Image (cartoon, rainbow, N blue to C red; front, side, top):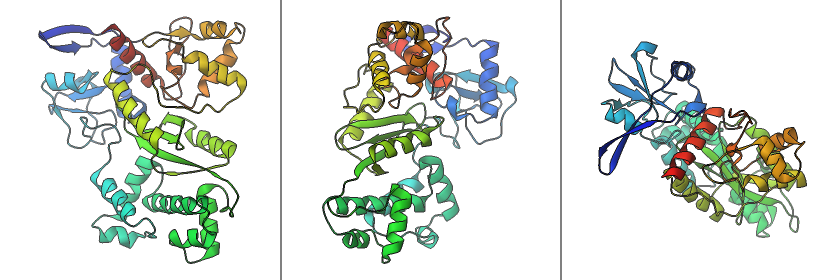
Length: 370
């Protein structure tokens, strides 16, 4: 269950929250620290009494002994307890914050999107290719070269959708060989390039920083199709299912729904937004769609049980089927499956991890009260 903090006022307009953690919770947080558990990003911060530094759970620095650790819910608490931020894990930045290396390489791709990037090109910019590979894989789930290749294919898809001949799309993407272009296209897009008059839906994917770690959003030019934490188990299967059902290509890029959800998530995590307005596309069976519609009726700051949700749908004996449909929700937070808990008050499951579910419920409860 979520522990409620005691709040002690410091001034008329400022409060310092001191959370009294149980021994069990301290032990759980310490084990998460030892295992670099990404599910706890944004859930807690650890202050090390021997160094006076505080870190995020996934800090790569040497792990302190448990007796030298103090745990905090927020960076503000750690700062007010006189700890200074670690220079390695940078706890004041969002989890998965984009490094200068990634920013510069992405900018380089945008400056020459048709370029076929190799390791020596990366080195010529003053970066170590192996470091670039690691950082891009950690951030995007692919290497820099794969990212640049996907971006080139996005350009090719745009040309094809405009009705340009395949040879024109091939040249725009920087490929001299037709067979090489088709092989690369099929590998990334999931199908060979279409001929004029044929149709393949184009979806764009963007990575969005959040206090709980990076999220992946996928949309077309009108609606949002997917929003998930990058650490969600089975995310690759979700993306593949989405691509197959829609016969779509998914490439890095931005669209109006992606801009919209990025701004709305900032407002949600700051506590000022309770209802999302970004248009969404719901892909599922008629039963799943009904489950997800009822989820959107659960009030902000409240929780329902799985049994209550099934009853609200008119299927009181289908609690297990309802819970399974909740787990198939592809729009985290926007369709608030995190607000459904077990009848005994325990949290139940959550694709983004129980620690994130606990954080989201406490965040909404606290802001609903205020």
